[in-house]
Amino acid sequence: MRAFNFSPGPAALPDAVLEQARDELLDYRGRGLSVMEMSHRSKEFVDIAQSAEADLRELLAIGDDYHVLFVQGGASMQFAMVPFNLCRAEDTVDYVHTGSWGTKAIAEAQRLAMVNVAASSEETNFDRVPARETWRLSANAAYCHIVANETIGGVQFHEFPETDAPLVADMSSELLSRPVDVTRFGVIYAGAQKNVGPAGLCVVIVRRDLAGRARPGTPRILDYAVQGENGSMFNTPPTYSWYLAGLVLKWLKHAGGVAEMDRVNRRKAAKLYAAIDASDFYHSPVKTPDRSIMNVPFTLADPALDQAFLDGAEERRLLNLKGHRSVGGMRASLYNAVSEEAVDTLIEYLAAFEADHG
Ligand code: PMP
Image 1 (cartoon, rainbow, N blue to C red):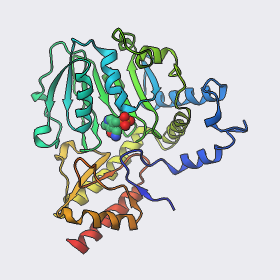
Image 2: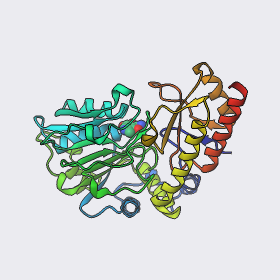
Image 3: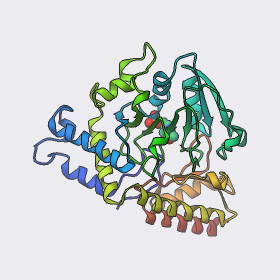
Image 4: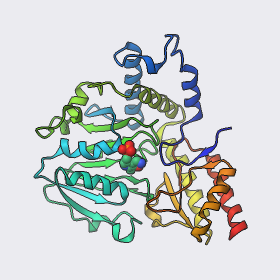
């Protein structure tokens, strides 16, 4: 029996996807070899790669005026690729700081540009998205960067800001969890290991007019235009991760697409937050309007009970509920592949544990 996996990432994948990968592992559709063993230039793999791109474009209604890239290096590499491609060292870039991943993105950008932190909720321990009217955007910023969903703190933008500069969003822990109007963004990027597929792959959606302007000296492999011109095959791509992402995208289409994911994800998150809010024993540290639908951090009234909580959860096969080491407490990640049954089982456990220890 498969466990209920609340991991923040690498995270749960749909059973149907893993079953299909298992069935095709040794012999991909009669070819007599595994996808892992194929040339990335082979017709079979090029078909896999192109249909993954086509499915992603269809799911998110991505127009031809955007490149869709499948690259390595994770979202962390995008922290550098964004400034390499979108600005020069002397340019000002705006960052809105809503959590730990924003901290990392800012630190990287500071090596490569003049960073203006336009707004931050650090003073209140990243419990919210700063109100738009408090942001101090620069007049001539090359871009404005946000982390759409902070995976560790569980803070999410539920509305995206209008900005004069191109909006750049780290959507690692939310891409494909809900519809998004891609035309609002200059660049969207997402490490795959949450809603898209396994680790090793990062999806980057770049408006074409923003590619081709990389600063002099940018390594070619980090240049959006070079990656785009080469169909993300400037070098050997992470072929097996790309194939698995393709299976996830097919599964998603079959399951009703991102609008359906949004409905189910909202329902899952709403009942978990309701259970937390209904009790004095559990506490959510994030302001209600900015709570994440994907990552639900919560604390126990007495941290001395944390380990007993996690042990009891494991006994019920509720895995990976420990909060990030930087913030402690608990965190349940509710990505697309986390079933409603998993969330119901967690909610039952919350009540049972409170009854025993509250
Ligand atoms: N941004 C966000 C929002 C993340 O959740 C993560 C990973 N958990 C990263 C960036 C870093 O991603 P990677 O490890 O793929 O570089």
